Amino acid sequence: MFEKKYEIFWSEQVRNAQGQRLEMLRRDLTGTKKLLEEVVLPVLGTFEGLELEFEMISLSGVKIYGDVCHPKLRIVFEEDSFVTHAEKITRDRFSFERARARSVAMLGYTYFPYSRDELEKKASFCQRNLYEWIGRFGNVKAAGLLELPVYEREALRFAMLCNKPFQVTEVSQWLQLKREACGKILRRLEGRGLVQTVGGGLTRSHKFMFTEKAVALLHGKN
Image (cartoon, rainbow, N blue to C red; front, side, top):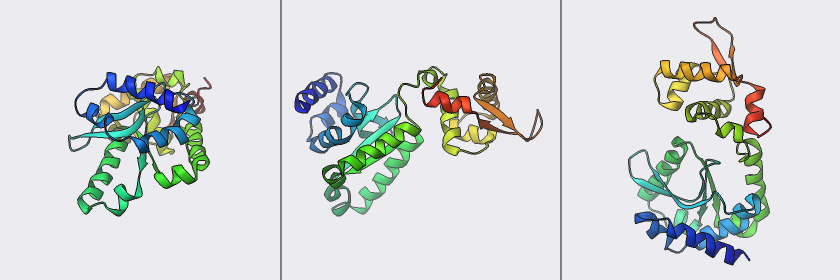
């Protein structure tokens, strides 16, 4: 049953791909299939929303690819074979892989790698890891969160990852926007009841913190 579903899914991905991504999709994807069969599909229950060989632009400006990505959940899954990713890796390749992981993080995706050994010997443990992540950060049914303008949504995501009071200057760093623009974003979030001021006065020195309403929104309980 899995093989048939995978073939349909893979064919659709190939049909909509071009250039280097198309070449990536036509290589040996044995590890990716294992990742889908043992973890991703059992947890998510569907191929819908997933993309194979997800294309991104790294911090250095080159194209990088994630084995499997769920763009709506903002998570990139990887299958790492010990032989190709550790035992026989060169120093330059090792450095590239670290920079690649940083790029994925800076682009706002959670990087979720699994080793081939884990997939073959500890599939249930791998599944639990993903269930826990979805419970904390990635409920795809959180429609209210997805309806927020992108900068408001990303500011809220970073705030929850920070998990402590934060200032406008920090939001400016997170979003790579000027302080004035970030102040407007926070005022809109405050108006929605998703952040609140903590300490300080009305015009200076105060910090912000996400509210329980924001937590409920993230987990689809709005």
